[in-house]
Structure formats: C-alpha cells, structure tokens
Length: 595
Picture (cartoon, rainbow, N blue to C red):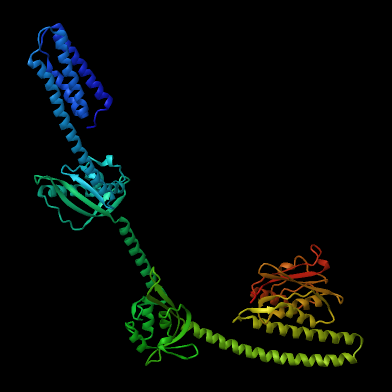
C-alpha cells in the first residue's frame, strides 16, 4: 500500500488534536468532571509517532500539556496523581512508538536496499530471470526478461506466467508440469532444455531453460526460479545454414561439371555426381579415395603430349595457392587406352580469418569439343592451302596479263588502246579483290593480342605510297592499340579517296587526342557520299553508285579492323550539310598506355 501524502497526514493529526481539545474543554468546563476521556488521545499520539518518529513526540507533549493546563485553569479542585500520570503516559507511549517506528523504517530501508541490489544483479544478467509464485503469478522479473517479452515490469508483476508468456499450444502441459513441481518440491527433467515463450507482439522465442524450486524458511515451496537464454537467432541462423547447405549440395550434385573437394593434403573429401560419371567413362567403378590412389590411377599430359609430374597437376598447383582457370589437360587411365581431355579449374577455400582449409577442383570433359576443333583446324588448314595455291596462281596469271597488256598498249591506238586500258583496269581490280580476300582471311580467329602501334609511322608510310597525290597531314606522334593489319585501314581509305576523287583530289588526314582515345579523320574533296548511303557504306558487299565502285569489301574490312581494335567508325560530309564538297571518314582507336 502506498504511504499517505504528507498533507493528508498533517490534516488528520490536526483534526484529531482539535477533537482532543474539544473533549478536554467539554469534560472540564461543561461537565465539571476532573477525569478526561484520555483513550481517544492515544490515536493522534500513536499515529504521529508512527509517521514522524521522534518528531511525532511533540503531539504527545502538546496533549499532555493540554490535559494538565486545562485541569489547572478550568478545574478548581486539586488534580490527582492519575491526572498527571496520564500526561506522562502520553509521552512515554509516544517515545516507545517512535523508537519502534524508526527501527522498522531502518529495517525496511535495509530490506529495500538489499532488494534493489538483488534486482540490480538480476538486471545485469544477460538471461531472462523470473520468479513464478506458487499461484503461477509473476513475483519478480529482471530487465532482460521484460525486454524479451516486450512488456514493462509493472505490466508483468502479479500476472499469470502461463497466460502471458507461454504459447497457447503448450500452456496446459506447462501448467501441469509446474503443478507437479510445486507438489513434489523437485524440478522436473524435461526431454529437452529448450523452452518456447511468446512475446507481447506474438513472436515466439526459443530459450535454453533452467528451473529451480524456491522454499521459505519452513521448507514450504513458494515458487520456482526460471532462467532462460535466448537462442532464437542462433537457431534461425542454423536453420538458414542447413537450408543453404542443402541448396548448395543440390546445386553441386546437379552440376554438369565434375567437382571434387579435397583436404589440404590432397585427399578427396567429396566427388559430385558428374565426377562419378566421368570416372565411370574412364572405366572406374568407384571414385579414387586418396591422393596416392589418384597418382597410381591417372597420367596427365599437356595438349602437346608433354607428361605432367604430379607436382604440376592442377590439384597440386591449387594446393600451392594458385588459382587455376581453363587449364586443358589430357588425362589417361594408366594401363588402358582410355583417354579424355579435361578443362580444369579450382581454388583454395579460406575461412573468415583467411586461412585455407580445403581445395575445390572442377573439371569438364571437353574431349568431343577438342576433337571437333582439331577437325575444324585441319579442314581450315586444307582450305587455306587450296586458297594459297589459288591466290598464288591467280596472282601469277594477273601479273602476266598486266605485263602483256602494257606491251600491247604501246602498239595499239584509238579504240583498241582504250579497250586494252579497260582490260588492264579489270586485271588490277582482280588483284585488289585477291588482296582483300587475303586480308579478310587474316582477320579470322585466332585473333592476335593488341599491342602499341605508332600511328604517325603508319600514316606516313601510306602517304609515301602515293607521291603523286596531294595528301595533307600535320603529323602527330601517338601510340594506339592495334596489330599488324592497321596499315590496311589507311590503305583502303586513302585508296578510296584517290579512286573516287578527281585527278586533283586533295586528301587531309587529321589526328586528335581525346580522353583515352584517338580520333582519326580521313577527308577528301571528291564527290562525297550520299546521305542514304552513309549508314550502310561499311556493310559487306555494299558499294557506291559510281562506275568506279569495287566489290564492297574495302570499307567492310576497315570497319572490321576498327571494331577489332575497340573503336567506332562513321561516314560524314567534309563540310556539314554539303555532301557534294567531299567525304570524311572518322574513326576512333584506343590510346595505348605510356610506359
């Protein structure tokens, strides 16, 4: 019960003292009786001593003095010993009550201090601590318990534990277990130490639960102390980990690639389904179970047939810390002719601290693919041989034809001479076609790596091939990423400008450095390119409307080369909006890094 406010206490004592004064006056003055109804006086005296301790004795002194003073002033007869004894008794009772009151208050403060200290210890604990009274109500709960359940302490104290904190599906069974524990005085041993509680929001939390029976000084069971550590997040994490492991296992087992997991000693820990099937193709009923067995079962060699010692196997390289990718190895089962080609990859798997604890190796059977590649390569080599023979023979025939045409042109005149000139032009066009076909063949895979090329050197070399043409170039030394075919770009562009331009055509080559790129422009004062033709001028077999147009391969080759170098190309007017004043072909190249 909460103590009365100080103002109410003062009011009560004031009223009681007022009544005492009225009674004293009534008995002495009105009734003219020497004795006073003093039993009533003890009520304010006791209350004042209980409430204020020694300060409350002043009420006893006042009432005792009131009785004596009233007897002397209002009564003419002499007071008896009893009259004065009552006044003294008032003070004595007040002193005794005040002393007992202060002692009780000190004891109460000590009890509250101990209780607060114990509550502090409970609140510091990182686990839920709750005292469940014998009547199933909550007698005490720490801060962590309130946090877990989502209630304030005052919302829980005195409430039925099972109604508040136990899920409905478990509630009756938990009640029966508690009743048996309270009756026997012994904590039960559940099948599991996990217990489920429900929060204010309806969320269920799983706790590691322990219980102890509480007894009073007489040995009677007064309740149960329960403690619980929240392991919900750990359980959810474990469940998520199990699900993740199951998903990973399903993925690994359904991979089309063979996969092996090894310890750091190189011993297999696990082979997936695809690996077992691959071993079956090599005539093995069971997958190898140790590194020794692996070494005694297989022989590995490079694609050119070089034998690989075990120390150079992909697995050995991975165990040394290398990351292996796309390593093609011939694998033969020792003592048989069974041989397959595998593409190996793999890496070490490290823990959170960065220390390796296992190795993963993947291997894909690429035997059929390699056989197909080798067959294709052989067919290409045969086709290239035929093409080389054809190019050689055609070039020889063209050279002979040009030679005879030059001889005949000297002896012919008029229409015959013009006819011979056309024959010579046709032979030259044939030579150009053969050259373009050879260039396209060199553009096919395998593509050589790009390397820095001096753009200024390439441009100046092309200009020297046309001393009779007005080619203007300021010169700028810059390195770009390209290969040995870069001169073909300028050969085709400059050649087109000369072929389609008038005899006095002027060609300008400009080089501008941009952010990480080089913009090259080849401009001429020829007839230009119609707007309808610009978007398709670089397509294969797309040729212009002019009678001088070739077979449409030159600009197609230019576009292929520029694209191969990572750039872009476009056709524009030399003077914007006026195609009749000449064409401009602009393309970009990647700038090579310095140093």
